[in-house]
Image (cartoon, rainbow, N blue to C red; front, side, top):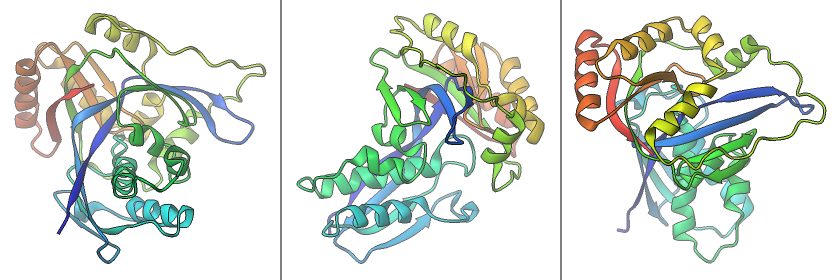
Amino acid sequence: MTRLTEIARAKVNLTLGVLGRRPDGFHELQSLVAFAGIGDAVTLIPGDREHVTTTGRFAPTLAGENLIARAMARARETAPGLVTGRVMLDKQLPVAAGLGGGSADAAAVLRLLRRVNPDVEIDWRALAGTIGADVPICLVNRAAFMTGTGERITPAETLPPLQAVLINPMVPVPADKTAQVFRLLSAPALPAGFERVPQPGPFSSVDQLLAYVADHGNDLERPARSLVPVIAEVLAALARSPDCRMARMSGGGPTCFGVYSSVQDATAAATLIAGAHPTWWVVATDLG
């Protein structure tokens, strides 16, 4: 029996600017995105009875509509003769974590369906955009500069890899966390005559990349910290760890990341922080 697997890698917003509310009610964003070396595993058995099963550490925390099921339904609506099948999700990323986990899972399913149906003509990126704002960038599955509501994506050809520690404090967050964070931000209307900024880079070194990240930051950090105060503690733990070069929050939180000079530094910091905070999800990985 054929089994195809894609890794739904964690999406990390190295920067996230919210430029204002658009006339359509959505927010205009600009974000430099990287993907981690860790993620969920999504497996498709083509032609089997269409069904989604979930296992893994964070499977019990899933709630609400499954984006994998939504992705398959939208794909079938777009191309009724599409070959689908049974999907198995090994959920290893925290849920509602600011890592685009559900979007990455949906995007992984779309990549699997694209592999199984190479002769079916579908605008896969447009289809991804109907499932969720982060699904198109997760479909691309590589470092990129993202603007608009997430639909404008320019791959970052020369993004140097970063050694990092990801931390999620594993505290309850509201089901509508992202919506609440944006409400707390209370972004002004997008100025008339707004023009999008050009893609940053190329970045010839880690130092150059970190200088850009330091200058731009994450506009959602302040409202997210007011909604989930432990984010401040996570950022402080990262900043205090030996050899941490930078600590920031990803997406709408509460996951934060610290950047280190080497794999050894990141691994040592992860071990130290996990020992001090055994209830936190702490992992050393690369971003690129």
